[in-house]
Image (cartoon, rainbow, N blue to C red; front, side, top):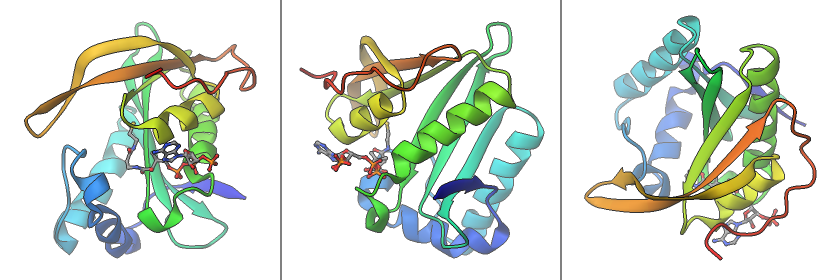
Length: 178
Ligand SMILES: CC(C)(COP(=O)(O)OP(=O)(O)OC[C@H]1O[C@@H](n2cnc3c(N)ncnc32)[C@H](O)[C@@H]1OP(=O)(O)O)[C@@H](O)C(=O)NCCC(=O)NCCS
């Protein structure tokens, strides 16, 4: 029932709502706080897709409001690799939105962008994201030390990857942190 669509200029207010959530804002590199910045964020997302550099989508159910965002960045055209990221609005969490989005964007990346290996990484203290990754068929591949920095703090990450040839099923939801 969930689907991906392009971000539209009319989604600017919803984007501001999403980033008003401190849980999302503190771990985002750029946080739109005004309608103008939100519209710029949407334009930037669309331009990156036109350039073939990153494909970001709004996640919706039917014709309903935006529930989240999912993106695949092309990290190497030499190796056909990509980096997947996602977030959901606070009110939409715990309903399978991020899991569906990660599955849908993976299908898109393999079929339409012709990537072969999709990677993602989450803070070790983000077990919800670890679960999403496993349920979307991203195999755990280990821990990278101090890979991410939010504010002044660095975080170890649980690394996952899914190959175009990997089935979705069969990934034990074993937290990277354990
Ligand atoms: C992480 C995030 C994307 C998950 O989105 P979501 O739409 O709630 O994900 P889903 O509903 O598909 O699955 C989440 C699962 O993790 C579980 N979960 C969430 N927080 C958890 C926690 N602290 N400990 C254990 N499980 C947790 C949920 O209960 C759910 O499992 P369930 O279906 O068995 O109940 C969302 O919380 C978010 O946007 N957080 C802020 C941004 C972020 O962290 N992005 C990911 C960066 S790597």
